[in-house]
Image (tube, rainbow, N blue to C red):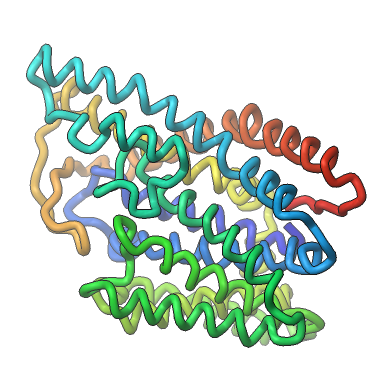
Amino acid sequence: MQYPSLESLRGLAALMVALIHSSFVVAAYPPLVEQASIFVDFFFILSGFVMALAYAEKIDQGLSFRTFTLLRFGRLYPLHLFMLLMWLPYILLKGYAHFEMGLGGDPFDKNSLSNFFANLLLINGMGATQTLSWNYPAWSISVEFFTYLVFFAFIGITPKDRKPLLYLLVSLFSYGLLYVQTGTSLLSADHFGFPRCVGGFFLGAFVFTQTQGQRLTLKPITSHSLESLVVLVTLVLVWQSHDAKVIQLATFASFALMIYVFTVQAEGLFSALLTTAPLLFIGTLSYSIYMTHALVFIVIDNLAEYVLRMPTSEIYRAGMGWLQVFKTPYASLINLVALAVVIGLSYGTYTFIEKPWRARFRHWAQAREPSSNLGQS
C-alpha cells in the first residue's frame, strides 16, 4: 500500500475485531472492545479507498471484468477456503462431543451443510443463510466481493469527471437504505451487510478522490495535534456508538476523515508510530488476523470450559444480549496470549496461503491480460 499508516490502522482494527470474540473478561468488556464491531466498517471504507487507488483508472483504461474479478477473487478466496476447511474438523468434533458425550449444544443448528455450501460459494453474507455460520467473520468477505463487482460496473457506466459526486451519492443512498431497514443499530451482518459494505466502500472511494493532488505541509506540532484530534474524536464516537444510529453514521464519517488526514499528511507522532516495523507487520497480517481469530478464540473457549472446567457467568453485551463468559482476573493475560497465537497463525497463513495464492492469481490474470499494469493491491 502506498500509505503505510493506513496499513497499520487496518491491522489495529483487525486486532480490535478479534478481541470482541473473546469470552474472557475481568468484570465486563472494556467500552472500546464492546463496540469494536464497528471497526468492520473501517475495513469497508479503507477497502473502497484502496480499490479506487488501485483500479479506478485501470478500469477506465480497459481492464477487463474477467481480469479484475480474478485478481479480487485471488485476494479473498484462498484464505477464506482454507479457514472454512479448518472449521470443518472442529465442527465435526463438536458434533461428536454433543451426540456421543453430551457436551455442548448441537453445532449443526447453525453450521449446517447448506450453510457450508453458502460459505463455499461466498454468498454467506448475501442473504443465503439465516444466521452467521462456520467461520462467521467471513460474512464481510462475501459482501465485499460482491461490492467489488458493483464497483467495476459503476466505473464502467459513469463519466470520469462525475465519479467523485456519484461515489458520495451511492454511499449516502446505501447508508440511507441501511438506516431505514435496520432497527436500533446499523451494524447488521445477518441481513443488511451488503448495503452496509456498499455505503462504506463508496465513501472510501470518495475520500480517495479528495486526496488526489492534496498534500498538506504542516509543522510537526500542528500535524500531531490534527492527528491526535481525529483519533480522539473517532475513539469517542466508537465508544458511544452502541444502538445509536446517528452516532454510528458519525463514526463512519470519522473513519473517512481519519483516512483522509493520514493520507494528505504524515508528519505527526501518530504517523511516526504507525510506520514502525511492529505495526506495519500487524498491518500486513490484517486479513489473516481477521480470518483466523474466530477459530482460535473458540478453541480456547472450549479448552477453558471442558478441559479446565472454568465456570461461566452471564454478562450483558451491547448489541448481543446475554452471553456466557469467563470472568477471571487473568482475562487480559489470556487475551494477550490468544492474540499472540492469532498473530503467529496469521503469519503462517499469510506466508503459505495468502501471499503465494495471490501471486498465482496475479500470474493467471497477467497471462490473460499481459498489456495491463495490474498493480500490487
